[in-house]
Image 1 (cartoon, rainbow, N blue to C red):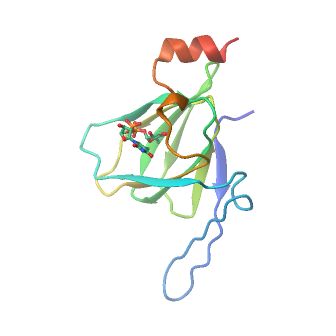
Image 2 (cartoon, rainbow, N blue to C red):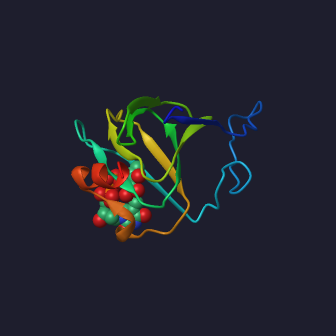
Image 3 (cartoon, rainbow, N blue to C red):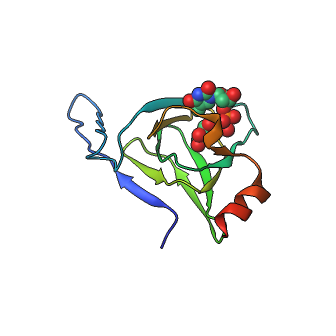
Length: 133
Ligand code: T46
């Protein structure tokens, strides 16, 4: 099964312009308990380099574009996010790296849980050890 779970978002744009609305538990398969966004990423900077033990997230590039590498410890897949009308669900126990942010990239993330550092696995060898048991 593909690691990249694409999601087309409910689009309600009209003659005035675009509008996307996302509701937790119906449009995404989890309750949305936190929202954050990443923007003005400095040139050449990559982010992420971790997995989450429990957290699930919907990632949408509402402006510009960036590349996301997903890795479940067995296989790796790359996806480019470049539309406010669709995104990807990133499940728990998936290592993610975010690369090639465009200058105008705004990456919106809707998360299933509040921030908790104890949910992060930031060491790749530890991730491989846990994910391959
Ligand atoms: C992810 C990718 C896509 C908080 O205090 N609250 C928060 O909600 C977040 C997201 C971060 N922080 C703190 C933790 C660090 O001290 O902000 C600092 C930077 O976070 P981090 O280095 O984890 O940022 P990224 O861009 O590497 O990763 C973030 C998310 O943490 C992560 O869950 O999937 O974006």
